[in-house]
Image (cartoon, rainbow, N blue to C red; front, top):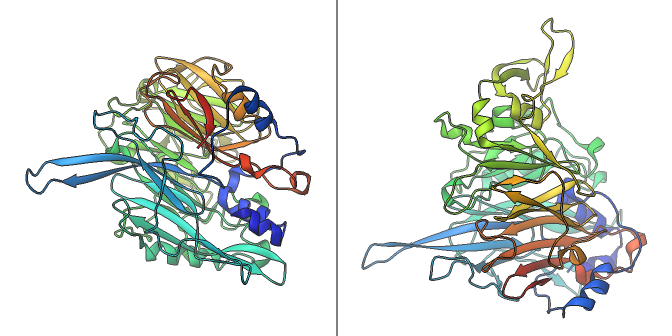
Length: 494
């Protein structure tokens, strides 16, 4: 798909990459050597690729149906992904497991999505909308899409005319959430046209929890973490200021989404930089406090379909940081007031663990000096060994797989959820697939209760690279979805 854009204009890949991956797609690869195919051909036969392109989201979705005769409810578990279009596969089997369709080329195109993207070769233009990100909650799936528009003046394709859609069941059609679309339009209208949307910050994300009832979805309109941080508008002191076009973080709820109601700055770590969230019960019996926000795209817990989370993991540069939920609960009383969006001391308090993770600050007692808030000592632990910034994570029973920017993937072994102090080489061929200089924006394990290479294991990874002139002749066949199935015994194209 994107090959056609590059034939028309080599600057296009950079523009679309900027919007599609925001802060995760930021730097260039070097050289044209193809280590993936060089290595994999020595080990296993490559399977035919069905899912290629920029994949920024793989989300869980549970579809419920009621039998008209018995009245019983049956649930099916699905995975949804986007690469411009939307694809899905059912993963729940008839025996209560998650091994169905654990095979190559088992994905189905969701043709019910409106204005699905296509390329018109007659006029060298795109028709329809490009789906750039997905999210899901306990009831709905959400899709953020834009129209690629060719700018004749600057000879560039630009992402324009953004829309947010939702659906409540598989292949049943999608409905636009007009209130959110209008908020995005208002925000985009304040951007500078000649920045080609690289000064924008629109983040769609979700908890993606295995337990359906723990799934929440959000969109942040305005704030930090655009492609070029010095271009961002409304970054900090306008959080939630709709008059300035900054709508803050909005919790999604299908057609009942209230775009006027943003999550307050500081609540459970929410800020103008939030990129992801996890769910865990912090023990205060307040359901609203069970969502925790992060200023990194890489955050996860060790929750499974049957068990509650006991550890939280998140990327901090090239460090894997983590803490136990037991320690979090024990330190709930450790909190402090913080600087609000107007630069003043807030009226509410924030747990110091969330404050340190998300870079919140306060003032000295005399009000003269700004200082960073810190968690209690030794609550947040570290695992070293990732070669570059961590941008994605996924959990197995025995390990945590770590996706990085331009350095491929790593893993740390787990003991009852607790990571080792440093990473360890893969036993599979993962290190010859997800390797430097590839970006790993998405990782997902269908069933985190199963070990990395145990029977029934099914793990997915997307792999991309950033186009520059130095990589103009690189092989685009690497870009797309890869997977590991125990039944197949290796990482291969999906």
